[in-house]
Length: 362
Image (cartoon, rainbow, N blue to C red; front, top):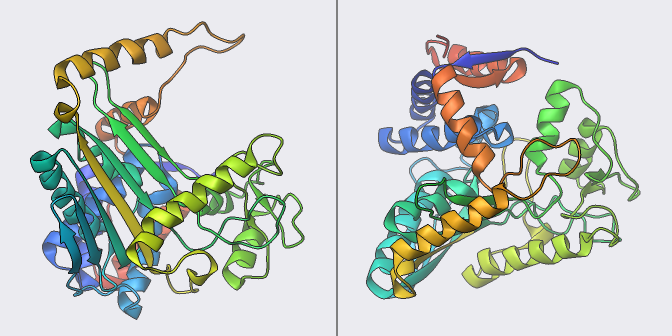
């Protein structure tokens, strides 16, 4: 297994921001994008972290991701918003759209927004968590390039289509559910490929629809659209609920893409250079529109504490609730430095040489 290098958070953020600026993004959008990427690594989600920097750089240079795009509002009401990102980076338009959703929810109690013609926006949880400090429940979803195989099929027909749901607590950490609707994300396969590891059973199928072990082959077959891909949440067939993950993935496509008048399913695909144009969905719910926020957060504490204190299964040491592991990882990695594997560090070094930047090392 590759050695992990620890890089101070601010150095890694500043490096990525500088690289984005060299690729054409504004200073504000560069820093915002860098923070979201590094947050993924800090929270223990390297599949969506700085390991993807080269892919974003290529997207900006090829103008699949337009650094100077100006988003356009297509539809707006007191409770809703539809935005055309006009091919811009997913990070800035997503954060600004979620801010607008929160503003609307403060006024009318709850609000939703769709963004179409955008690009990869990192971890969905980042945007959902923006609602927490406003005593709101936050929701964020995105469709992706078609990478998921329907139950009993062998051809990709929907994306990993992640969704995030966040609710604030009082003294305990918030509940932060951030999950793909496939068994794993493509980024997880990329991590296994970088580390030279075989895929566990239940993650993906090959071009014949049978369980796959080699991440490189699955990644190549998905990109070339030869068949095979990621399994829905629940795994192979319907014995362990694979059909439920399949249904959730289609639900995300409906909310993100169909509601915004955007392409879905196999019409959304990556190229060797960069990622597909995708669509997002955001929502915020003001707790005070339903109940006393202080009471809600106290009761959240009680519920989460009950979950943590559930009697343990044999040989297990702890019960977690959604977002707890990630919050603890964020605290630890911010203190010790963000962990970066050898291959990712090499890609960052190539970016440093390309743009004549100082390498992001302590």
